[in-house]
Length: 68
Image: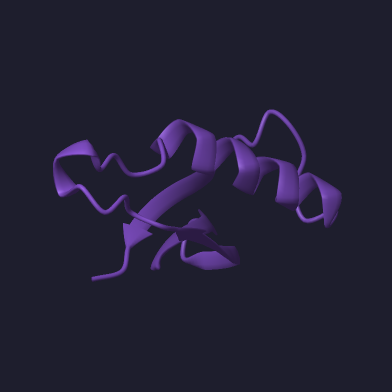
């Protein structure tokens, strides 16, 4: 199981970091990580649900990091 993190930042302030799990397939040739767009979409939903930020999310940067 690999972990993927999405850091949500406004300037130098980290609003939230969300952790997602991803199970790579046994056949490494078929491995495709979760799409960054989908991860960012989920992070935006989480920010809204937690009332930390609201659309259009102006000024918020979304950084996707993959664990080794």
